[in-house]
Image (cartoon, rainbow, N blue to C red):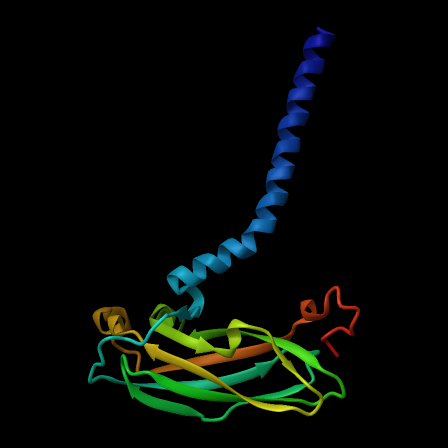
Length: 190
């Protein structure tokens, strides 16, 4: 009887250990899986990446507004160089954002982005963007960073988006401390 209880206890311990290991593994996989899901589906306003411009340009105009923000700890000034652009759906747009390093040392940042309304995210396509890589600014350096984009003509086929006349493209820059990892340099955050 004691042998049977010991086997049952080992089996229960093994099951719970496996569940604990599985839960830890799932927690590490959750963020990359969520990011991949958002990029594929446009969920929550996640912008899509395109290799080339749209093949068709429609008569329907759409206004793209631009917004910029900084997370705490990044000693930059960051703003769009234009408030908005109105183009035809499928037409390629080029917008610029200006960043300035206000600190006395090089600082690296990385931008995250989204669009509102979120339901338009799957149709907003970026061809080139400063947000695809880290940006390092030297002390006092001012840069103008471009983004090349278009609104996919497929938006016209989605009746759920018939009411969308304006899309806001928003960026938030964050300190990117990994840029100095292993180099012995200062942290990118200030």
